Image (cartoon, rainbow, N blue to C red; front, top):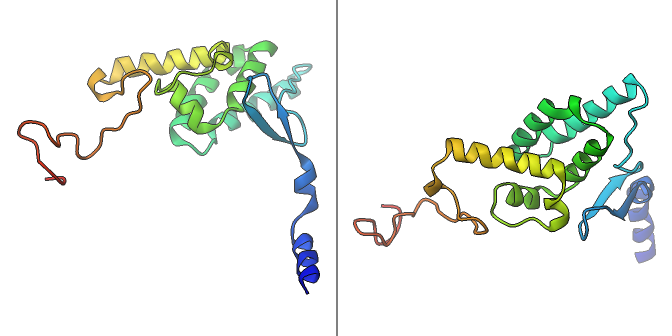
Length: 170
């Protein structure tokens, strides 16, 4: 009976998913990437149509990450800069887009120091510079975390301060 159940479970799983995805080590050092079917570093700028498709694919990837803050930051930056990028810069952009959302957000917002391989990426440097410029322009330093420290303030910021509540959100 157990072997029948295992056979039925194997039938329910599409076998193409397991074979279509490959794990490979990218040029980002210790960070692994997962890609389906084709490698993510394929950059074809041979004709106008392939360039247009590549630009549209990268623009979509930068806008639809599932992490609203990164969707806005990366989408706007890529939209402004994709037309002026050469093949090397596009490969650097692909490397940035292959990074995991939580790590990329912590590195861009300055909560953590990025690894050297990421920090030396020219696209990451440009996006990081834009984020820091916007933070300096629109947010007071007291509303941000200290560099390298997580932002942990919340609804009870005034707890324990003179004149603040001793407990709860009063």
